[in-house]
Image (cartoon, rainbow, N blue to C red; front, side):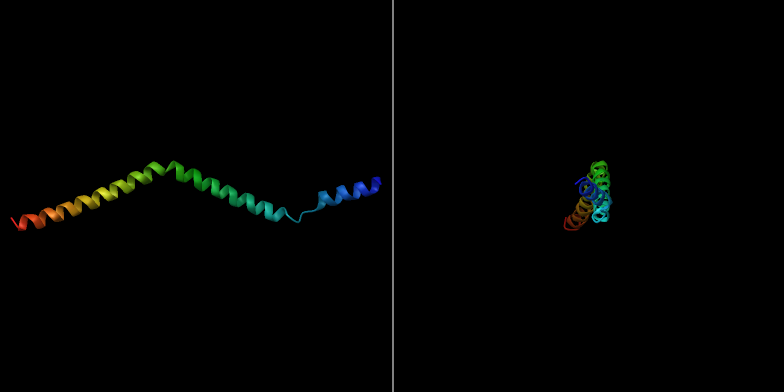
Length: 73
């Protein structure tokens, strides 16, 4: 009986069938965590950049409308 328990324990310790999958899952999880941290750090920068781009486009559009309006005066 003791040999059977020892053999079962030994086979469980030496079983490496799921090791590759577990390592791949950990690597992918680590990459996802790094991406989330970077995105959260640059969130305010990216939102300000979007506002600035939108503001520049609006200023350009407003000046174009002003030029057109001045021609009709």
